Picture (cartoon, rainbow, N blue to C red):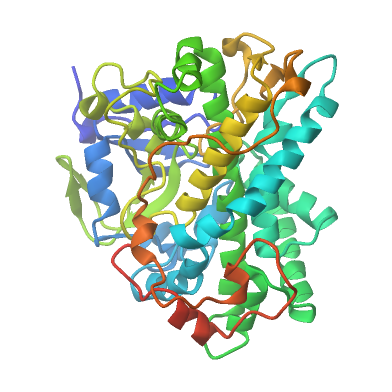
Length: 473
């Protein structure tokens, strides 16, 4: 018998995320909205139904600002020792509410529209080609870790070049820090140490670009913060953290999960190999069935709200459980948990919904539609090097991917064509498409991942060149 929500004890989430799929099924079995316990014995509500989550993400009575709407944070109970502290303590558009969110989102929107993203494709293609060229040399006893040597370097190089992060120790440091932000199994001391290391790197990046401005998004944000845009230093730093973290971890998981799905399901691999489904079908189905972000912390009820028959009290924390919602049988039927690129309905919320819809969704999709077909064309005999069930997940209930993705490239790899031009299928319309720039002008840092070293245009010019704040921004 299904107990009422009020009668249930909170479900204690596994901080190491050993089996996110099974845990999602258990959460759904408790109801579309259920009590959970986060690390550190912090209570929250998990929303696992597609319909209920879609409603939550568009409800103006739901905030992401803990400083205004989460009593535990306001009371000082949430400290840097908490593994999720970096997710809730930042002051950027990720945690902003109302007018502050519109102001902060407007500044970076012009860099991430679908049109601007399309202009980055040639640079992404060059990055993909270099990564594929290097793969055979990464083999150890014939086995390559595809997460380490394919899924990671492509989005990391794209976002660090876009952000103007210098190559070398700073780029490596950011990767380590971002991995740890997603690692929900850190001890309190490890979480605190990573928090301080991350902000040390971010402050170093800001000072570097303040001294040596370039044709990049960091230089633009630093310029905006130093002007009359009312952008504080903390907002500059935290916006950089958001873009760097979101800009690579989610795409790493998307590439990782899509490759794993095809290599563990030969029938699905054959569908795309023979052109019966497009690469866009593979990507959208991967986003649906294995959301790169399984649970996204946190939102807060501004007032008492009722979702799917359950009342969430004012000030309660809420977890958006994208992985569970993606496999919701109420939305996708009894085969909701099965990867099927030929599925007619691939609706998902993996990039969010509403005013906090992910600005980087067009970029992530473009990277995937460039990298995945190129990988399988270059290495047509690509295969898993060990049974699918033995490949371990990353230690996180937030990030959904694998610790490693061991593969063999096949003997015919060197003879395969070296190209990134492939049929990808229909263009997927993103919510961010609504934010297109229609003026034709753009700041210099939007014109490509790399370009002539020049100081970006003024923030006022960038705002005029971009879109005005719309309902989805």
